[in-house]
Length: 91
Image 1: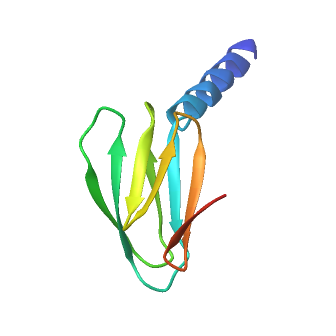
Image 2 (image 1 turned 90 degrees about the horizontal axis):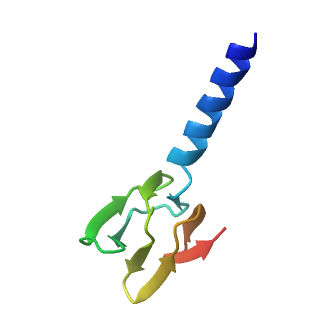
């Protein structure tokens, strides 16, 4: 019985660590949007997020998200971002 509790606790910890530095972006608009995602110390990546879609991206060392002239920086914590009317909205 104690082994089951220990195993469950280990799985819960592993799940929280893997998503502990994820950036979730949800596109609430009727059109797709393209933005640049640049991890700290990494190369910029072009991301196309379709209408009503959600994407999760690794920001374990922090990252910058840029769409047109809009730019937002995130640290290594869990963050949620929404695209509404072509603009970023922090949740």
